[in-house]
Length: 76
Image (tube, rainbow, N blue to C red; front, side):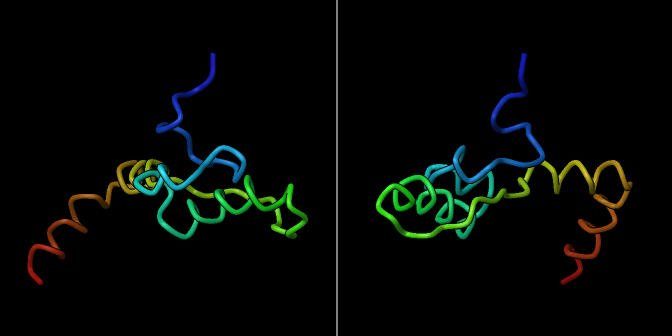
């Protein structure tokens, strides 16, 4: 059984679209849209992947720096 879409570290451009902005950000979601819709029209959109927001949050938690970052940002 695979991971839930929102619990993956990477998502390939053919897996994401504009509705996935919260998961991969606007630029990556747009690249996914372009890859899915323009490649078949002959537009050369290179295949690639996006690192997810989940992966970023996981890294911060596992590295033990999540609270430190929150503390620094709270002082801004």
